[in-house]
Amino acid sequence: MTKGDAEAIAIDALNFLAGDATRLTRFLDLSGLSPASIRAAARDPGFLAGILDYINGDESLLMAFAADASVDPNVVEKARAALGGRAWERDMP
Image (cartoon, rainbow, N blue to C red):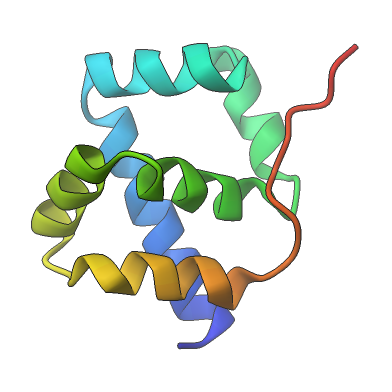
């Protein structure tokens, strides 16, 4: 899997989260982000990897995303590995 393919899967995952208010709210609550700060966070190189970490961390969410995106759930883990680097953590003030 290329880094570009992995980034596309992560963007699909973010869109999947954003497409449902409950999913998005939970992600925002757990990440400490606000709707207004997502764009700024997305500039962090580890943010897309963090999205995939979040999706991979909840099996029911992973299965729902995989079904929605028509991908094998294992592809999400492969995409995360292809992005490499550290897991994204929101900078604390």
